[in-house]
Length: 450
Ligand code: DOR
Image (cartoon, rainbow, N blue to C red; front, side, top):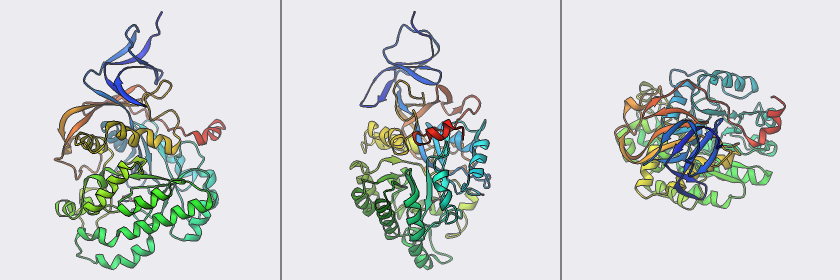
């Protein structure tokens, strides 16, 4: 008697490790139970995926969801709704909330808030400060934590570690890969005068110049190597950093964002003004080409959205008082599918960057690939659908995107988290049932019930 499955996804083209093929996918108890041609099994539900492509769900390993403290910009409910609609099945959220996530109490508070409100699986970074250095090795091993985040340059919020001595101490202690925002704070301060009141947003990449990013990336990679630490350098924005990072592949993994691959100065500032102001900044076409080269040379391991919502009203304040950050968790996949359509990378390479890459870099348990035994976290996409990013599709409280009006060929039409449909054709489905993401490096601590 053949087994009864909870769900059968039939007839789609699935991007499996090692190749894309027509392949049915059976799901039982939230996990992938069988792959191949599965015809003689009963199933509670059948999804006809003929004409669609089935990807492992996106693991977006850099989002800012603003809860607690800035819920007027975003909260865990709306941020994860945006994720679900965009084919994102897990998010790793950053610690620059109010209060910042710098201790176990703040971390537990985020997990409590996410329960019953998050539509996708989730993990929360812990922020490093000069004052919590002693606790970091314990904090980095708490279940549901992807690692420690260090802001080397000040951005939204108060988190900052810019002293070499403190960075040295931190990199000596940490036992997991840590993530870093690499901009050199001293250089940013020195150059701040370039953006006096009345400056144009176009000045943003001149103030926070390439050298500020390169210097900080060099410094943190050097310290990581000297101290036997592993570093994940976030949102790489310059051509020069790619060369540096290629030399540090023994210890460094690399993230870039769809914004840095899609937009270029000065045009983007002329069109969108401070709405495309982010840190590190969107730079000129030479840097964009350099970042693409980093992708094609496989120096880049991960694509994250750096979803950083602010209200339109806040963004419309005169530069430089306008806050930095661009929303993007929902637009990551459509924008990148369009780049696939344009021939800039293959679909398999995209999946490497959005699912398998983050799973490898952060040692994620049971996610990031379509394989038996793995969580049935899936994004069903229509590679031929050409749709426009519109305001009414966006679920973020920010309510806007610099990509409104952009038409993308390739669109997420259905998202499943552990076998449950969470979004279909632009509609959210069911009640929020997201759970904490598991990490291999915290297995022992999870077992101890911490
Ligand atoms: O532009 C940015 N916005 N860069 C960051 O590092 C933080 C983010 C935010 O939280 O707004």
